[in-house]
Length: 382
Ligand SMILES: Cc1cc2nc3c(=O)[nH]c(=O)nc-3n(C[C@H](O)[C@H](O)[C@H](O)COP(=O)(O)OP(=O)(O)OC[C@H]3O[C@@H](n4cnc5c(N)ncnc54)[C@H](O)[C@@H]3O)c2cc1C
Image (cartoon, helix red, strand yellow):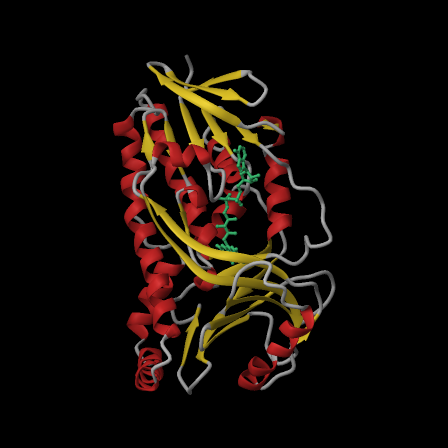
C-alpha cells in the first residue's frame, strides 16, 4: 500500500501540515469536526507569527495581509525598566508578522479543501501491521500509515496516547480587541508588564484604517465573571498613562481562558500529536502557534525522509525522531515563558527594583538580545 497520512483537526496547524505534505507529494486527508462559520468577530483575533514561520507560509503560497514588526519594546509598568529588540540589530528583515486569525485559517482551508472531510470526527482507531484504521463518527473507516492529531487543546485522541502531562491553570483570561493609537508607527509592538497584568499591542492591518493595533491583555480572572465592556475600557487608563498616549478601542472585546500543558509523550505506534494537542502556552510571548507550525514542518520533513526511503512512517522508532526534535525545544519555550510570567508577577518592591535594573542592563547587552531574537524567531532548530 502507498503510504499516506490522516490528519485529525483542520485548524491552522492541521491544514498547514496538509500543505507541507502536499508540497512533498505525500497523500493525506484531513478530518475536521466543525468548519468555522463567518462571524462579526472575525476581524478581531490576531496571530503573531515569527519570521521563520511566516516566510515558510509564503513559500507555500499562503498570502494574507500582515504587518511586519521591526521593533518590540518591553516595559515594566511599575518602574523605568525597558528593553527593546529590533530586527536591525539581529540583521533580520523583520522580527515577526501580525495576521488576522480567520483570514489565515480561511486561506489555508481553501488550499487543502479537496483533501478535507468535514462535519465528522475520528471516534476510535486501531494500529495494525500496515498502518492504522480510523473509525469515523458515521461508522465509516479510513486507512492510513499514520494518524496525526491536530485537534487543539483537550483532544481525546491525545489523551489516549499520552495520559500523562504537566499542566497549569494561570487563573487568567486574555482579552483581545482592536484599538487605534496615533503615537506608534505600524512597525512597532509594545508590551507592558503591570502587576498581575500583561498588555501587548501589535500593529495590525484592518481594512483601510491606519494606526490600528491588536491588543492581547491578560488579567487575573475566570471566564464568565461578568466584567462589562465599560469596566474593561476604564481599566485602560493606566496603560494610557504609562505609554503617554490615547488608546481608542474600535471593536468588541473577546476573552479566552489561559492554560499551559505539555504531554509527556508525543507518539505511539501509528499515531502522533502536534501543536496545541501536545502543548499550550501563555500568549505573553505570542509563541503558541509558532511552536505548533514548527512541529508540523519538522514532522513533514521526517515523513518525507521515511517516505522516500521506504521506511514505515507509523513505526514508533520512526515517530520518536520527530518527538526528539520537537519536545526539548517546546519544553524550553514553555518553561521560559512561565519563568517570565513568574518574574513579572512578583510584587515585592525589592524584587521590582532588581527587575527594572535587570531589564535596563539586558537592553545594553546586544549579544544576549540577539540570541533571544534568534530563539523567538524560530531560527534555532535541532
Ligand atoms: C488570546 C490568545 C491569543 C493568542 N495569540 C497568539 C499569537 O499571537 N501567536 C501565536 O503563535 N499563538 C497565539 N495563540 C495561540 C494559538 O491561537 C494556538 O496555538 C493555535 O490556534 C493552535 O492551533 P491548532 O491548529 O493546534 O488548534 P486549534 O486552533 O484549536 O484547531 C483545532 C482544530 O481541530 C478541530 N477539532 C477539534 N476536535 C476535533 C475532533 N475530535 N475531530 C476533528 N476535528 C477536531 C477544531 O474544530 C479546530 O478546527 C493565542 C491564543 C490565545 C488564547
